[in-house]
Image (cartoon, rainbow, N blue to C red; front, side, top):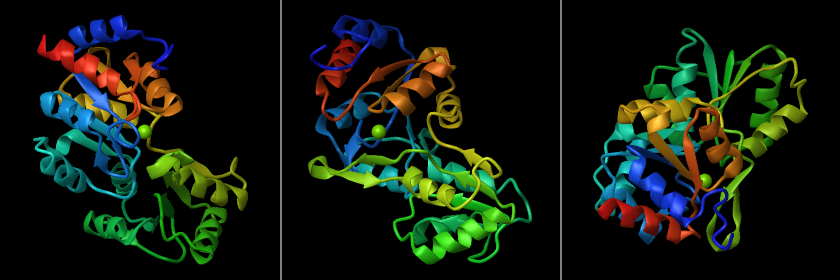
Length: 258
Ligand SMILES: [Mg+2]
C-alpha cells in the first residue's frame, strides 16, 4: 500500500470516519514533531476539538503545556481531553499513601509531583517513578537501582525506546532509561508497573473523557506496537497515521465536512 496505513485503504478510512463518534489521538509523530503541530493535524483537531482526546506517552509535560500549544493554533480543548503518561504515572504513585517517592524526571515534573502531594526523596525510596528524564545521570541511576534492589516498586511512564525528532533524528525515551535500570537489577524480582500505551490505562481514560466506549472511538497513531496494538486489544478501531501521511487526515476531514 503506497500510503502505508495497513490494513485500511482510503475507502475503509472514509467509512470509519463516517461511523465513529470520536477519536483518540497520539501526539508525537502523529500530530506533532517536537511539539510543532503539523498543519493538517491542526486543522483536524480544530474541526474535531469536541470529540478528540489526546492520549500520549509524553512524560515531560502537563496538559496545561499542551493546551497552550493547542490554543496558540486556535484549537479549543479542555485539560480533561489531554491524557499524558507522565502525569498518570505521578497520579498512580499518589495511590501509595505515605510512600517515599523518587521521581526520575525533569525538574518541572518533580515540581508537579510535589504539588500533587507526593513525598519526594533523592535517596532511599519506596517507589521510583521513571519519566523521560532528560537529566538522567550515573548518580541518579545508582540511587534508583539500589532502592529497587531493596524492594522499591517501579512505576514507568512508558516503554518506548525513542520517539521521532526533527530531521529524521530520534529522541531517546523512557524505555531506554528503563533498560538501563533493568540492566542493574533482577527484573523478574522487581515490581514494575508500566502506565503508558500499549497498556489500557490511557485509552480508557481518553474514552471516559469523551463519554464514549472503546467501540465508539477510533485511535489515530504512528506506532503500530503501542498505538494500534493497545487500541485493538480494547476492541477499538485504529488507523496508522503519522505526520508523514497527511492524506489520512485529509480523508477524515473530508468525510467530517461531507
Ligand atoms: Mg507517536
